[in-house]
Image 1 (cartoon, rainbow, N blue to C red):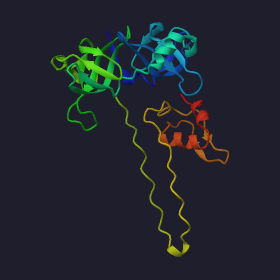
Image 2: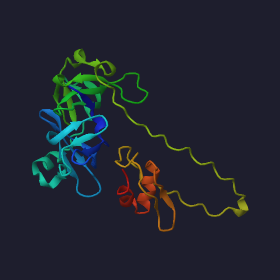
Image 3: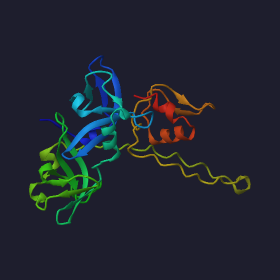
Image 4: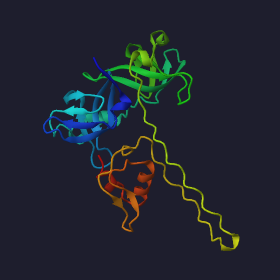
Length: 259
């Protein structure tokens, strides 16, 4: 049995065995709670109607790609009403609060681990004090100790007896932290007599750290009608590029020219 952390599935390309083409990228891992398992993937969220790739129709799930049998395996989400209803539940375990049956706090779910052959969840990584500088790394709680997985995760009272450290049980989930570029040097001060009116600061809409475009490669130069560069060919998309593209109403164009 091989396993993969749920956080590593997002962003993986879906490659078709038919002609080795990339038919999409995973934006959302769809989970079910009874029994706890990954049942499929949503592709192309935020552009047009999302497409669905069911887990039971996948040829293979690896750490670098998900392989489908044919180009047309991903179908429109609306073509499967039962699955569409499951997606509406929006079961997302990452950052879900965990408690014991007695009501004692256990921490927050840091990640989850999936059997790549069946989609079954085999464990949850729970951190008692989550955070990049936390002295307590997450521990893996076997799924046999999990009584309920939804917005609130309920664990058996003796879950701590079965918990194991992440490194000795499963590969610790890898998280990519993109470092923002250094701020530009401040401009030279202007003498008071030449100083013009100061513009009001504009609050830019924040870009989510999970935005599906972050880190993708730009396939061609994107610029505004006035010639302002948004992204050049070969660039890796940053939060600043997404913000500028959104302000210039070019986010869709940017989205359609990435891989």
